[in-house]
Amino acid sequence: MSITRTAPLPPTTVRTSFWRKNQRRLAPRLFLAPGVILFAIYVIWPIFDSLRLSLYDWDGLGEKTWLGFDNYVELFDDEAFYTSLKNNVIWLVLYLLAIPAGLAIAIFLNQTIPGMRLYKSLFFFPFVISQVVVGLMFSWFYAPGFGLFYGLIEAITGTGIAVLADERYVTYGIIAAGLWPQIAYVMILYLTGLNNVSPDQIEAARLDGAKGFRMLWHVILPQLAPATFIAVVVTVIGALRSFDLVSIMTDGGPYGTSRVLSFYMYEQALSEYGYRMGYGAAIAVILFAIMMVFISGFIWKMWREETEH
Amino acid sequence: MFPKPIERSSPAAQLLYKAAVPVALFLWLLPLIGVAMTSVRPASDLAQGNYFGIPSYLAFGNYVEIFTQSNIGWYMVNSFKVTIPTVIGAVAISCMTGFALAVYRFKSNLLLFFMFVAGNFVPFQILMVPVRDLTLQLGVYNTWYGLAMFHIAFQTGFCTLFMRNFIRALPYELIEAARVEGVSEWRIFAYIVVPLMRPAIAALAVLVFTFIWNDFFWATVLTTSAETQPVTAGLSSLNGQWIAQWHLVSAGSILAAVPPVLMFFLMQRHFIAGLTLGATKG
Image 1 (cartoon, each protein chain N blue to C red):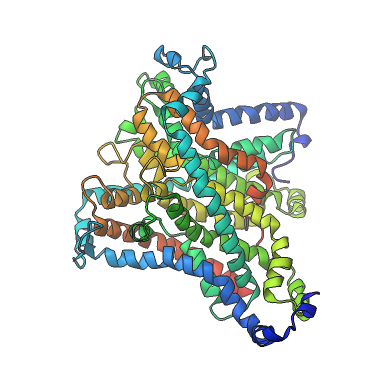
Image 2 (spheres, one colour; image 1 turned 180 degrees about the horizontal axis):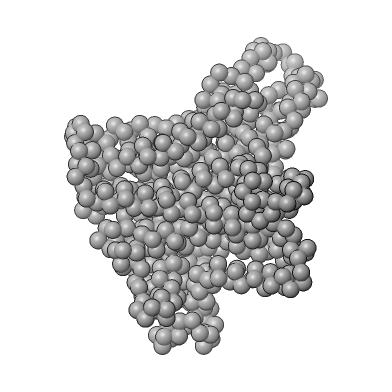
């Protein structure tokens, strides 16, 4: 290669040879520097700063007042906090339905008829669209008086339901909107997984008389384990991150009954009634703690796989 | 193949299946189809209660109207201004971090790798107050580049995970051989590894484009005015202005969905390869 010929010019020899000797050691640091610095400033440090801020009373501009754990004590008596926490649990549980539903659609679509590629991409569509747009679509879908869903319920039961204005149904209505793109995502994970299932094992199992659900459970699902792992990760994270849909579809209403922690935190920290950054940070810390339970689980599994080989 | 290929079933079952797929698709996309229909429905139809019937004519004027009556054109431009630099920045930076973590052995390697992975999963709210404050302090609050800077940093987490795993799967002998030849580390990166990373770069570029275009939370936290807000945040405020004007809300929604949808269709293979990385044995 040409570098060996161009390198030994007298003035640069010293620097070059220092670089030559140490580049294996220095190169990774230089390659990592921009990414690590940016990530540390914008992601790692803010986590610790939020932990610290949650112990203060702060309006975002003026002096911070030390409170100790008062923000957390206040949370314990905060009705809205419990509503949000309860809704987060509902989100988490119902969001996991995306996994069987996505698997079902993937199995349904795993055929080779003409035009199947296009069908699959169209089924995947909801995931590509912004959650803001998904929220607006479902608001239209649920709209009292003329919404498709409203009309459907009215036709069946005689009285329509204004899902987004009804405390009993609002959270479920928003979750249904969230499930739409989430199912599409899980579907694509499983379609890829199904594509790579070993045909030999299926044929062998067929010869043994396995079919239908038994085949799925004993032969297919074990081979789909990597897809299932990713599906669980993205679904749990997606459920706990839910913010866009709540904000677009109901703005937390009616009477704050559709709030989730991420939304409530935003509301407290940047609300029109004054900024309570410290209190908001405390809510964020609780949400972070809940997520850490899952994140550590995922990381633990990935870590084991990494260190095994 | 699982389930059993449909070609092995009776002709009747095959016919039934071929009919069932488009019907299922229609039901699945009903909210989208409904909104797309509404976006070309004249306002007069809505006033007369014609919500689902055939529009009396195709009112593409709705799309003209949203451009003349609102800032949606600017919102779209702002979205591009945030999204494109983020794609370039995050992909470039993660090529380097991914390379470093995949190729070199050093003590903190796995630790740094898992820092990127874990950071990628945290809830946005734990970052919100400090990031907003930092953005204000740097004097880049309510600018497209202030928003893009944060996005670049945050996306680096996911992109590093992706790039590192991709480079790991490349044949390491290539790098060894180049080192024996005396090729410098930088040249190994730039002339040997980067060209092999093209599929990964394409996959990440479409994914990051979609993620950032669709971002709503950070857009509302870090930008406030029509001159800087991307289309997701803009649409949210327009939704407040256009109460009950569903033909306009629908046209705006469809417009905001077009760029990521186009991106997906043009780069479908890369998009799905990126999204399903690790979904098979890996």
